[in-house]
Length: 260
Ligand code: DGL
Image (cartoon, rainbow, N blue to C red):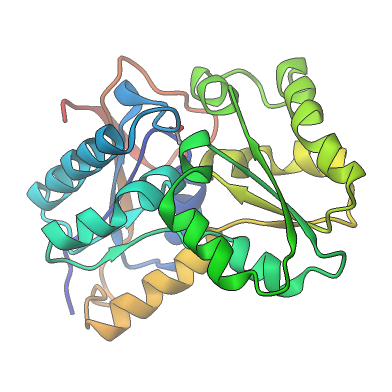
């Protein structure tokens, strides 16, 4: 048993899509979330910078006495998880690229991936793609230029900006007859309804929310790190820019600006 908090970070609010589910599922756990929105977006930075920022976030979470760290960011996972695991002793959970289940399940042998530029070009992503793609399934990759920045700014998800961008990014894949769409960026989870309106219900959206929740439960059990049953679950969210968009943040979470 271990009553210390679980640490989780992202470049901004994207990882909140995972945090919301973790908070629901792990009722006795305390969470500390870092939104590094001063440095957002990560998706068009170099691997070196993304790794430095990820190390900085992990150091801060360790300083805050976290027992495990969840990297709730595909860009950070795919570019820096190997380095993080070498540096830090605590268990570090990253996002499994959802490309693997999509490759296993596709019938049309065509899948789409919407992710940041840096996730799509990372070794981890390419390795997963190659090692699982025995049947030469066609993968359509699309960087979601501008989506993260505008979600961070608080542009409404029903706005014409997102409608136009998502149409531009997704319709070409739909025309190619994909049957799975992998959301390879945690920010895009907030756009799921808008994406479904465009691609229809015949194309399955694969996100990484439940796999990461299940992996967290598994690690807590394996390392005997769960909090005691009488502990009250809570979330403390720190951000380091001037403000943070509150649109997707649960009102029960405590929020505070902090330098990190
Ligand atoms: N939520 C991050 C991800 O999953 C966003 C990346 C960014 O900051 O560009 O990749």
